[in-house]
Image 1 (cartoon, rainbow, N blue to C red):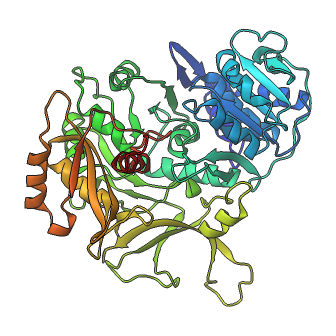
Image 2 (cartoon, rainbow, N blue to C red):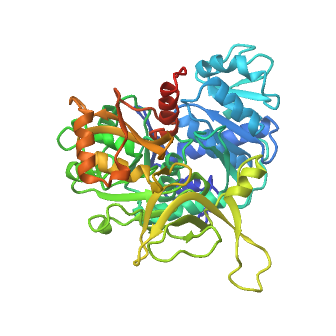
Length: 532
């Protein structure tokens, strides 16, 4: 019998040893049990050996959520390679950047996606093989790069894989790139397995759970649906949705017990109708990727009265940082909670000393979940991954923590509160304004569907506050009425100088979050008379 998993691919393998006939994945109309999944993981690992893929070399997966995506990710680590999941929403030039940046050797994709990529693959000199799912690829489908049919790779003659230990690299997850080119966050087996065990422990995941994978698997919170489920021996519903109603239908059809989503999706889900009994099996719902608007939280709790709400905060550089236990939600719904199990969160001043209670500071995370830095980017790695002072004078080697760039405060009871991204804070009339705090007030009016707040240069104020909003589904929105309510509820320095009304939805980044930076750039370009 296999011992408890220490390597990423051991999570599903251990679950298969416990219950091989239990469902691991729901992929469309198909159910895949743990026995079949782990068999294909081993076969894919063997297929990479047949391609002579070296230890630590990168395998990119550019597919939507499907059985082959999961097999390729876990099969890559079983071989001793590194998986690189690419968001299926990315365009060819963005995909090519990732392939070049981390020197991908094997690309797994579909025939349709490959046809779109062909013009850019010649600029990826280290790419040696393309594995194609679906119909068998014709000769020359990837130009001069050899192509291989998925089934042929799985049926390759046996070869040996590489030795792997838990400090080896398992995956590289690319950030959304809202502040420039995306950065590849390097995660070890230890990072990912420790994260799975920690999250599964406080969500109390068990083998009877059915988790909905609605977020991209290239997003740390999306991939976490796989790792936490596999650790518990639970089932995962792979969902590629177009409309919020698709999520509702999947929850009802598969009797989902747990959903993790980002605020824009939660907002949409409160504005569609749910059939009677659709939420009856939901045990919990969890939020990540930004603060949950209080009005949205209230609506979800009314919609899912038996489900426990988990409000979480995390960053790709350390998987997860904090969560708020459900029994604390009523007393402090605006808190991001405390550190998750097997992790510590510090609130530090710029000089590295600890902040006092309620003093704003930078959130810094230490522990087994802290990533290995950014791929091929020593400058940005040095900015975010820095040594902490040794706790004991005899300790010689430094401990590396991740400095989030997020401003938070910790109250006297130890609960944390998110204030804002350091680079997104609005500086107006000498005040520092948190965009998320302002957005919370806008949502509380119950007039807006979605919103984004940001600052724009102003001669006398430094920055003027601007908000871009959409109306709620089926309802008209009067910007003047919204501004009047803001004047009632906000100090004068926080009242928006301008409200721009747009048709929804607002732009998202690749992980489904409202893209405040893109919205701000569009607004500034339009204001300056430049092309959008």
